[in-house]
Image (tube, rainbow, N blue to C red):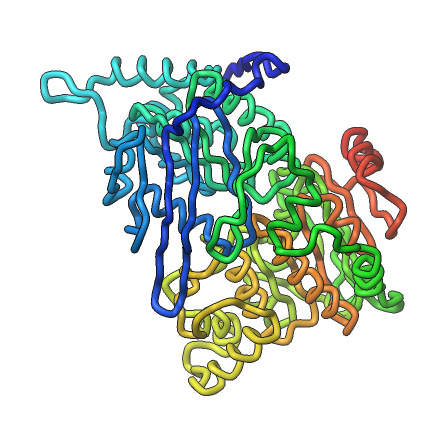
Length: 526
């Protein structure tokens, strides 16, 4: 595999001056669902040759607005203009044919098919009634070359890392003569190098005149790639700003609706108090020695005390999730031993871990967490029902009481406990999944990227609640790609590198720079 990037210096990154007329414009968009005003008088302008970032908390209306743009929803009021002419996309295919393509957070491609097949799936070039494989592979290579990416287009997509799969998804999007490219949280699963690769591609497309709508929760990425920013709040457009004229503090304040001069000292003091640890002593609640799995994780030692939070930090692929899955019995360890409350235990499945008082919120909210078609109530009751077995169903009144209790405690924004969880924003889905495990009254909770892809306010609410659980005596294993978050909340930090432990540190012993130095140097790695 060979990757070549275009020059990412100032000349390459400079956006084209927006013309007077936008290529795509939304005016007065309104959309309602039963009991919910999802969008109210929303406006948006996208110009060719620029990256326009859409910012807002979960539930602000970003995803709903994208679905209006791509024909999934038909607005109740307002109009969409393409080159000044009204359009009415009735489906995602209709939107694509109009030149509006979308790449979503999860890469919805077929890993078993080749790169070329994924780019042209459903519209293979044909000759004499058969697939013209030669033309398809040549055109696929040309599309990737446009993005300055050179890979073997005949190889299965699964061979390549997620960043390259994102490029393939983008190539597929622009292969239909797209003029507008919508990227919905494309960086949430990428490491720093992969983000740099994606941004180089976006700068290249911007220089070619593409209008790009970029949706993200990462402030650093917003300021690294954006020309303009539209902020949404509570289903309305708060405003549109030139990126260079909007400070980060001002942006956050506009997203959450706080006054621009809001002080932070009192809040910081309160948050510091919220994460004050309970001194650990005696036997750990869970002790793992030499826990490992060939090809996934080198033998690892972990102690988890009740009333303390242990943070796992490291780059993507460092072994954080692999460790969590072994501790929960989701994967079988082939070495090592686990003790709970001083007694040897074998976790052959998650059911064994749940019985021992361990809960696990997976990083893969879509495939391993929320069951999107089930209600909030059903999702909350799921783990408790699994522990009791299918032959002992939880009575409906108890399910309803549990759901109402945790919806209220965690501030879940939902019209009803019977609302399908798939209709909730990402942050509210995450709160429901946390409630699912809290309903089992666990003594230990494993949180793998619990705040990934959700907004600043929802992150704070979830982490404040988790910190409160820790103060009350729960043992917590906390995994996050955001170093400030790990360092802020963890009583101890275990640094991972190349699926090995590089060292364990007490709170305050490391900062962001020193963590990266440990990772880079591989200090103490076995």
